[in-house]
Length: 108
Image (tube, rainbow, N blue to C red; front, side, top):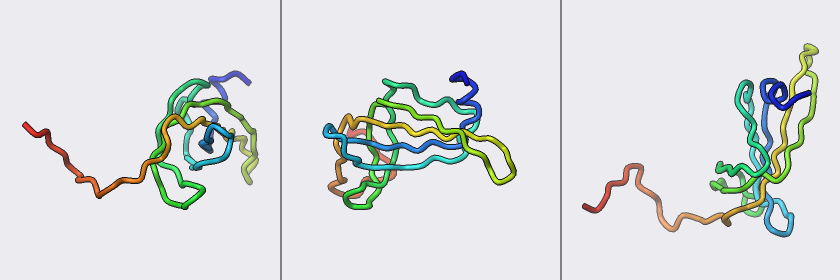
């Protein structure tokens, strides 16, 4: 199956961020991915994940190191592809020091 067809058939994406030791830092799942391109190895991705240590949601920035495609079958027999993206953490999660305003203006 070529990359374009796999991307077109992709039902969902499971994203897993790892630290430099290979430990899982955070995870998230995106469903309804059909028709969207799947990030390639080397691409940088930023998304909100659930941190494994605290269970809180944080945005993490990472680089795709591996992609795994898995063909599954729905209950009605339809085929779908799930993708697992393994990310290397580019920046550690940072807890906000104070609530951020919804709208920000420049100081001038």
